[in-house]
Amino acid sequence: MKKIISGSIMPAAAFLLLIVQPVICFAGYVNESGFNNSVSTAQLLDPFFSYGVDPMIEIDAAGNPADYSVSVMGLGFDNTYDYYSFSVGTGGNDLALNTWVVFDIDLAQVTGLDSFLTLYGTDGTTVLASNNNSLFNGPGDFLPVTTNSFFSHAFDTAGLYYIQVGQNNGGSSAPISAFSSYRLNISSVPVPSSLFLMFFGVLGFLGFKRKTRV
Image (cartoon, rainbow, N blue to C red; front, side, top):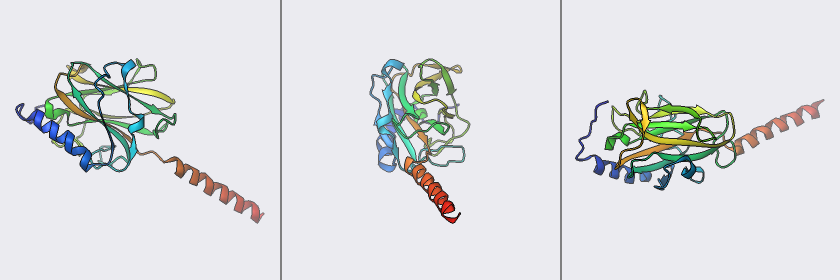
């Protein structure tokens, strides 16, 4: 896809967007650690997930917003991949099994980064899913034409998973070029545990009512 913003203003625009975004949104935000260039050093995101609808983080092509998410502000300095880890179904956060978890790159095109996302299993080597260019542009993309990545995946096994941020190189993933930036969103719309408890409480109450009528 064609680049839309000239190279002379890309770094400044990216910096301003990364600074302003946390102020106007409600997701949990964290900066990339800078020491996450392998699976073994992947940056753990579990403590940073938070509830709150963020208008810039969509979960589908219709633009419906997530209400549970984390956003990582990433910067490429050393021509390596960036790795992040997160739990599903373990209680480390509220990402649940058999629920769609969405992985989305925003703002990367501002610095000319054609992002490439790869999702790895709990062993850190099995590829579960990947995406180069998404089929649509959500509200967090800002531009009508981007090379941002977007995909969703439902997990059926509890454990610690890994997401790799790279850049497209002829249809495959390559290390991120230096001085590129991006925003990685991991989001979902889980049912909070309190609602599950209320649901089962209502079922129990109805069962008790039926018994008392017999």
